[in-house]
Image (cartoon, rainbow, N blue to C red; front, side, top):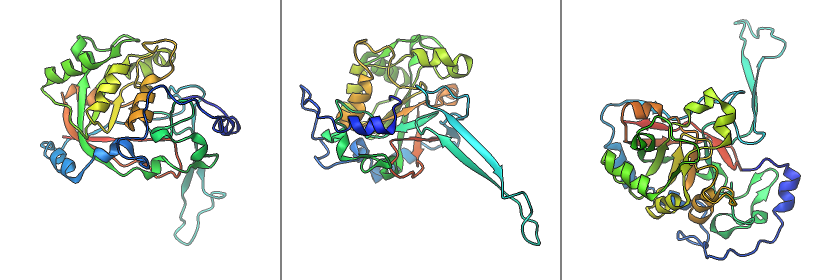
Length: 309
């Protein structure tokens, strides 16, 4: 979550961490596992999720990413479009074409955080030291290119509606009471293998006031993160840039929810999810489909998940 140079990143990866007070590794999926909660996906789960498709309506859950997209730290997006060669048509059929060059952080816009993204004192999922898998040319383990397609049941929890507002106030934590209340209100049950998406209304702030959007946000709290992980969800997403509540419930801590989900439980994080259409249609259950780009060794990845009803 911090913008730092490759040289500095490689330097800190060699640091020897202090063992955490609690035992959070090896993973319950096995000491050599690199996929985390994706192990909770199954063909049977896909067949069950497909039964939710009754209207054929599809929803793009990714926001448009561009030069003005609000992003953490100094992350930027730049796309350069070029005419081929000197512009001279090729062949007797006078063929012309355009190319584009992308210079961008991959943790911008709608994104998935892989298990190599955030850790605890230089240890990451399954207790793996950064020095064991981090290189300047990409991750040797936990790269998002290694993830299989995520096809499963998606559940939208409309926390804003639960609170009776369009947009939750910045700093509002979402924990087990809110999760259970929203699920009961909507008549849904969170199950093992689900992808859970939280609607806070915060994404609307991105186009209104980028600075305010990034300064703080409503989001998942520490208890809520642990609860969802215990339920066996594959991923948790929200319509905010960091998923978790900011400032943190304990203001001395930095991104503790990311640590609980990614490092301790192997649960993936989805950020900047476009939830407005789902909310408008009260689409609380749906078939969730994600096939991320296969950029070798990537820590994070810009994505456009699809919901189908």
